[in-house]
Length: 466
Ligand code: UDP
Image 1 (cartoon, rainbow, N blue to C red):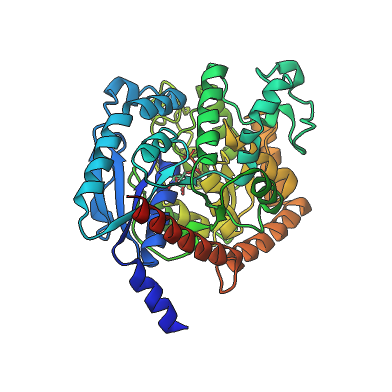
Image 2: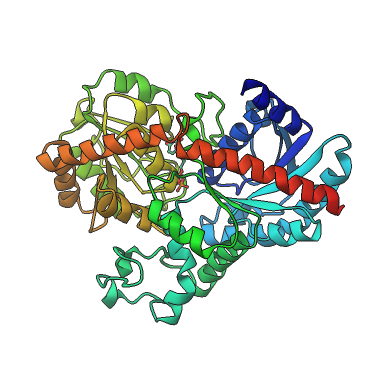
């Protein structure tokens, strides 16, 4: 058995994979983890990255990095319009990415490039890969559940769900139970056609790829997996949770992680702290920010709060807080700009995670058995929050956005009442399932083996067709 594994590793030596992450934190982290996983399977790794949100190669000495000039202007990068930025990246990167790929394909003398692994939202890369006769595999960094909804967009559009009408928010989406219209993964305040176009690009070019990798696991999203396996022509590999494969200290964090959060947590009672963080992209109005601050303060629980610079529209950092706010809390609060989130969630003092329901945060919380309070902002976060609260039942969703009384009530339900105990119980069981899928014979490890052998078959196709 061991000899067989050695031989397979040996065969993959000289095989290189080119990975291309979308330059946002929630996409970079899983792509770099995937690179680490595939490197451990014997592949050499090249990462192509944009100069917007550029990566630090010194954190990953085993990989080769190539930076491309994406031509994103300073004003475009700081516009905070994620949709516009994603669209721009898909047009401005075409030429530089193609040039870089051509160079890599001609440069590599001893190694075969097996395939490109691109973020699903870099949908332009399918046409480039096709023109170079290079197989493209996709990494979708969100969940399968939200992807099923994105895949249903043409049908939902045909049936008149879009653009969403305020009067219908509480109506069920009959085609996608248990979703209501308000849970559909859209973005407020953007042109619906533009949004639809990006989603269609992401879904259609994923379908056209040679396979889709998911940072999820079968036991979590089994029925969505069955649906996609029926409807999609290409193979699907749920091999997550990526961050639980290895205890790696390599960081792909774009912001410095404030370690003072850990020493502060060390001083708190077990399961007493609410960790509040809304990811790398969400933005709040000043009014919402203040409701959150008062909701946390009035809950009487200790809290660790990540206030990312730029989180509050129109503010640098904490200026909107009333003067003396922190002092009145007598050390019950610790506010930082960016946390070492994986360590925080794994800390015994953390009792709940108030999250915007980004997919990485959701999965990371499940893996540590930390129940969630969900406050989704846009796109797939709305679907994730619904699954957390209504399908897996491992958290509560704030229904009225941010209202200090509702926040206080929600925290009580989770931290003090019986309901919270039941939720905690369910997420502990889900945590065990997440653990099991990465043990010998577990579903994700089996899917990883299939992925590796699939990529190997793609190699021989390229080899013969050149
Ligand atoms: N994260 C972090 N420190 C923080 C907040 C977030 O390291 O203070 C990491 C988190 O662990 C996750 C990623 O940033 O891996 C955020 O991804 P997610 O999908 O949750 O949200 P997004 O930022 O894409 O909205």
